[in-house]
Length: 355
Image 1 (cartoon, rainbow, N blue to C red):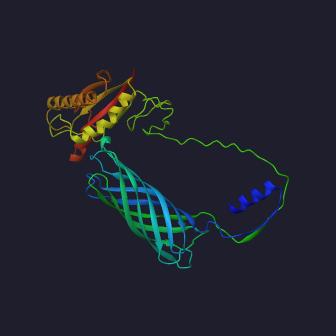
Image 2: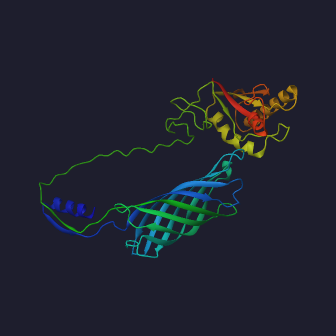
């Protein structure tokens, strides 16, 4: 890059260049690190996480350098515990390599200390917040394996000041790639006729799909489609589909929604607000325990509870029809275990049509 700039200057003046080039870029690198997360127990309902880090580093000396990076993580809650949580963060780290990073040792241990910020995307959305993060860690980077590519492993302690504060552990394993491999050489460039070339390059727009329905936001006429529903080319729901509302549960033998069920429905109701023509049947289903009449009555009451809650959050009454099916449509019949019964106890959305 440096020679190219010098050459451009010489060509513009009509002269020639004989330049001795020094080593360029040999201390710059890019790291791609898949991660495994052990979240703080204070993150209620979260069991484990995974993600990926992208780091850019520069070594000022054989031992001291700085890294800037971005990280994306998803924290899994597991079946029945609601939707997963997401975190987007960035940090700047001071890195000290115990051995010379460009030396011949098979591995190079290092220590790091950093500070940054994070955005925690949790459920319900009103609890989303940005926070300060800082942490420390240690790791190993191998010697050059092939054209400067190295294997990198590290562990970090991260303090996240989100809400009451969280202490998370992150393990990473990935590759480190050099950015430029400078070699000492002499470059001689003759002076051709000066030419001015205008290059017009169109920068492509990033693909953004907030609701995950494979239709870009700028083309999506029906935003906030619930996960699992198929849509047309304009992002609007296609009729005659059925999806199960995972996480919509009720108190034992009652039609009252649990707090977790309300959190799930808070994300679903956005689809009815964004697509006023959407018409859905809410189907309630029970297991085979109890009498047919009791199960039919209970399922109807639960479907009514879901409908009432969605209407209270902004859906129009004529968008929703509540139907209780009791035990008439068992997924597993006969039931041989409690797991079979749990699968049969469900709430479903059936897309009746788009008015």
